[in-house]
Image 1 (cartoon, rainbow, N blue to C red):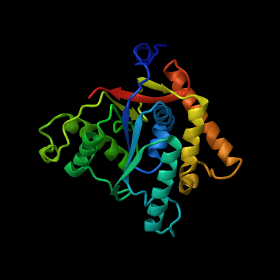
Image 2: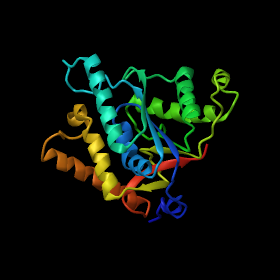
Image 3: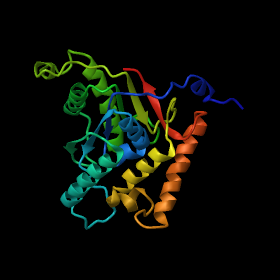
Image 4: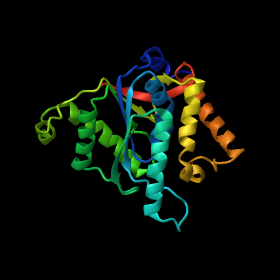
Length: 251
């Protein structure tokens, strides 16, 4: 049988070592799922990591009696705890309403502004072209991240930002997690896998919805093993060690 991924394995780029990185997730905890171990490793090497959360997370529950405003406050606090575990320097909240994110030039401009302000070597985000991705916020956030990176690099986009002193900026790479056809692997050693898992567990409001009831044993251990198995599968697919896989684009 023909191995469709063999060319990707042969051409896989070496791991990156950015000085500045900007990760953009639709909701609190999305970045940790997609790139938590990678960001922890980069932060340990001296990289300035900024985490940008596009929505307020106010619909992230299965409890119909939950107060959306209180849930948003709780998820903001959880995100800051998780960022501290990973070693991120800053968390930015764009404040769009969870589940109601719509693509707009305003959103594209917000992403471009972040890229121009932070001047990252690498931007990370959702792959908007993932097949059968049901969550509309993930699709929109991923597309806006891609388009915002393009806008940030070209000076005729959003000239008002340049007038404010935010010059055009072109990152070296755009890494998209949850890609159907990944071609880039960032290795994850056990210490950084543990940080990824700890950061995810900091999002205790999501224990039921995305972590299989994590929060107490044995559910915590089962969740941790699921994460480790996923990282190992990523490595196997790209003929490398356990790690987080991405589609790598060059802006």
